[in-house]
Image (cartoon, rainbow, N blue to C red):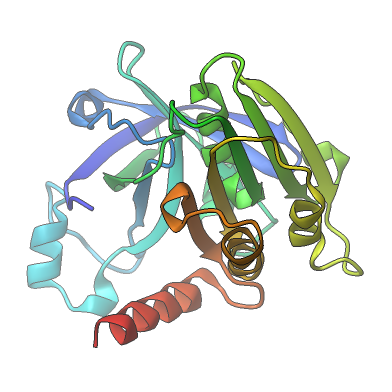
Length: 266
């Protein structure tokens, strides 16, 4: 991901569901934010540490060069739900689970005029316009990317969506030019594998699939194995990513992923 920092201001917020908050931001620097083709376009949101004074103008290259690592801003990775250069607006949806965590509470407290700093964007996926059908699977953390992907599917192309959320109040309307068939699952401690089980039970349409499987790392791993080993889906037809791991906070999960990457290249 490019290191360029974009500084924006919150314009408005909206509570989409009891636990999903939409933040819309804008500002002069948005004009230089790249409009990439990816629907999983993501940014690193930079949360300054309250006890640290940062150089102005805010510049991550300067911060990295002049400040010890423990003083660098805390980062959280989020999908850009929408980018509208004509309106001068960038939209990010945040899952909010009360006072725990960093980004969710920030979004819940955000007010017009608050500063939002982000680095990026990155991204690698967009629905293949030549695929015969699409499979999208995820939990709340993947809903912004899945929503953006559904909007990009060509008209009339089948889309199977399997989505896990806390309860019926967390379900969202998904706009899709394609023929969307969405299955909503409500999280239950007695059914920890229900997402993978639901995918195994699907009757796949004929033809070539393009699949997007993102969210909690455990089900992402299980579904990837099922698609590759049991359904014969080519790896190049899969976009898979663990956004988080059950029982591990984001800092710990990012450390785990960094260690895995280091092990893979050693």
